[in-house]
Image (tube, rainbow, N blue to C red):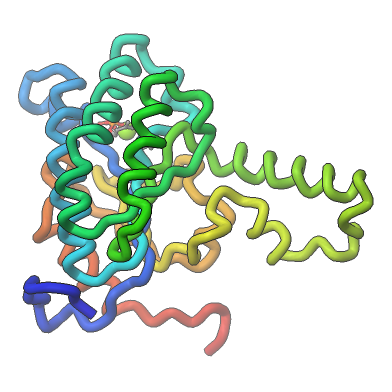
Length: 244
Ligand code: IPE
Ligand code: IPE
Ligand code: MG
């Protein structure tokens, strides 16, 4: 239940333990205003700040943000450069605020693809926040669900070839334990902004039974009221997991 003073609307009766977000629509937000795509990304960082704070206040335990996909490396060089710079700045400048809010930081994805200075800052910030006990903020960086599953298969095969594991022992638990997300529960709620109705290679294994909330709101406009509306929508869902 809520950790501090946020008064939740009465219609929010269930808090998802893990919320995953596909933060989409920065480019369209900028285009609608005659701005550059990178201005949209800049404004999107403000939404990240507000959603991290709000999720923590609501008592969400895990918040996974899809910040950069493996496929996003195929964008124009300059856009990638700006995104990496914004990421590095966020990681550096947000530490005091995250500390104040008791947020612990994690990252998933092919982190070694990131520029060296981003990797360094990422590890520094994770280290600085490691003893916090509130919201777990998980950044998906150079992330691809298929790459994650492929890497898991490879590491399981390695264990088998070394004789540490029998093929008959490979079950869902073994696979889950070989994913980047082995320490976290599966998402209860996925939010995707900008109205797109696809997963875009995000947490493919983990979202087998995740509830999906899609809003037309573009990410830079997605703030506390929109997050509370998503929680309200989730509260109305009847999760059956195949049962009746
Ligand atoms: C999401 O916004 C940010 C990233 C994928 C990094 P987009 O940049 O995808 O914005 P649109 O979809 O082009 O509007
Ligand atoms: C998904 O958004 C990736 C992130 C939000 C980081 P994209 O904008 O890359 O997805 P597609 O290309 O529209 O599927
Ligand atoms: Mg997009």
